[in-house]
Image 1 (cartoon, helix red, strand yellow):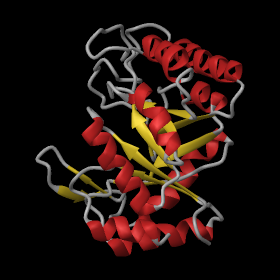
Image 2 (image 1 turned 45 degrees about the vertical axis):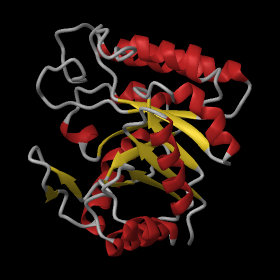
Image 3 (image 1 turned 180 degrees about the horizontal axis):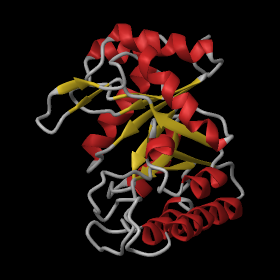
Length: 260
């Protein structure tokens, strides 16, 4: 079953040169959507250009839980307002929030309980974006992504509020990642077949359509991408998400995604 939707995720898009490289990679794999972190200073201006190339644009962020001005619009309330007042009017097609926790009490640690009611913050965050999307008069997707087992192992994250607002959910069913020394290491069993079932099971509590994500794609093989696609087909999932575009992604991996 071929994928009808492919979404290429982006962390860094600093300038038009980055934008052009991202658009080229997205076209190479046959993506019809790019999902770009809101830290990009050119995101709002780039949305019409991606639309002209036939691609939808989603935005994403792991937002902070405490007020901070560095980087801008990082605190969840500021992030939601930025999406609502700048990106949605610019034509944004969707937003995927990424609440996580590194257990470090950092500014973006969604398991902290010393900074107020995070369930209320999550609810307000989602409501601000959904209200602006509804008023735009255009179709808009709202989703939640997080670590593939986080709804089970990090229950203090206010997933109930994020999931209630979401149209779809996106477990990060990565089977490989780069460690703090920038070395590829296996996680979740080291294969798509070992990584995907846990994400599907743990995100089932959302009671929303579940789209398992592939990543980190600069560390995977073409054969593993093919296996990921085959597993999606087994579950009748026709939407594939690929994290993340960078210059280290092997051309053979891009070609394998194109074939899905």
